[in-house]
Length: 299
Image (cartoon, rainbow, N blue to C red; front, side, top):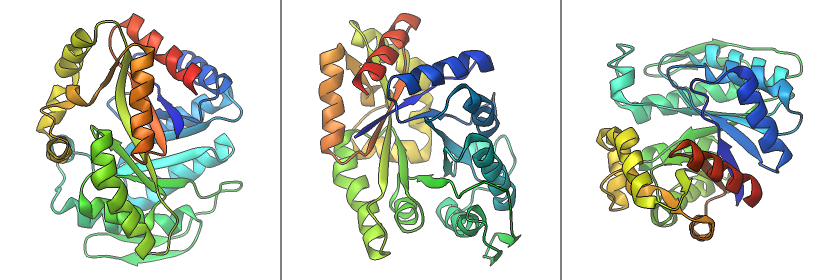
């Protein structure tokens, strides 16, 4: 199981983010991850940070598909590939109604069907192939050519059966949120594997994004997670995966405790079939620093 590191870019300068990426590279982290939130544009940030490093992979988890047409996203992703020496993993996902409908004013009707059309149109474009796609709700016609850019690895954020089927059939794998090892082992891994096998594809990646704090006060940190991320438990796709794991809220999926305790939990994820454990450091500044140090040492 590989170790990935999420870098919280909020409020940080490009030099600070670049230094964090360089430290991860120097300590054996396979790839660093950025979120598409309400600050830095994640793909643009990766293009800017890449010059601080030479070998580490970069991933965005994830770009919401509704605001960006496949032609536009493919052009941006291939541009980032050319600028980073082909080190990008492109993660895409449906996002959530409060953002797609509430902020963008777009319809999120039947998201699994829309995402499948999106991936069908996006894949050939990333490979530089001509596309003449006309689906029920999406049209994409054209071809992109960016010198030096290879097709980036494409993964789909998938938590439900239809999304996992699409991820297994059409992408390199999935990235999860709020899914414990028991959910990965009993549901996510077998569902995505079955889809990939039926499509004649290799076993997909399962990247588990998990809130982690190496801490001497796990109860306080759990309360912090509840106050900062508890609203995620009301989002339909997250609520469904939490219910599968019998969890009341995101705080119950966190990995918290001293170094030995956290290492044991990471092994549970590995045993469940996780291919990359994505450490998302949380808590106080001191806890975040301790957690990042643990991740760098563990890798």
